[in-house]
Length: 287
Picture 1: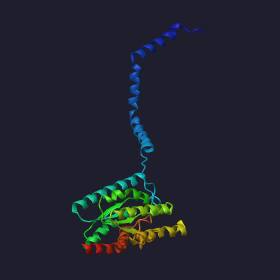
Picture 2: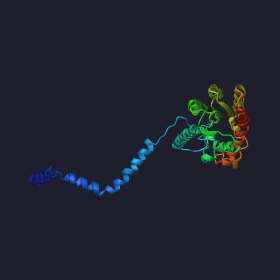
Picture 3: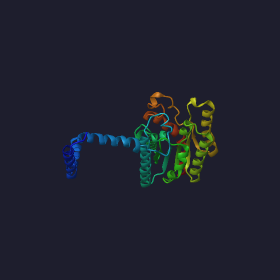
């Protein structure tokens, strides 16, 4: 059937004129603005969703360790902990330089950093108060970093030496053991750390660590023995077990069952004090 020209021509001409006039553009904008409330809801939500997937994956140099093996922490929280302890160390070191007091550096992982307690409740600050009470004039610097391994500690030795410590309390290796690292590697790292400090004339107090029995009798026994071996080889004052009297006692530990409470750290300070006191008395005697 043949279509009449008059019927088909008029609509086509109208469409052409409308397109040329640009009115279709105004119509599209009008529709867009009429739905703008919906757009204002969709765009922020989609942007947040993309950032959550792509832009928030924080990586750190040291992967899950003593803390992360047992407690759920986001990578961002661990990174913040690294930054916080680094700034705390630098601030403490600067104060030490200003006061010109001899320095003791507490060098370790989350057990030294005081994860989960206030800074003044961690063992380094509690130790500092005890020193002052006993009449020993020292600055105690907290150089603990959560998740730190013996390998990470070895990389930080030169940084620790910048504060020019007289004495270092070395508490590292627990994260190695909880990860099942080869014991020889842990021994080599701690060996290198102690040697480097002693080469610079820094006194080292070595804190021994132990592992839960579920890591196997041989591994746990050899793990504890490597600290005893290092203490004898380098003739350093030795804390047989850093958490003696605290480990496995629920009322002295936080919810993770690993990190002490403020009361638990008071007992840790006593453990440290027993190894530290003879050294301080000898240094005082030498003037």
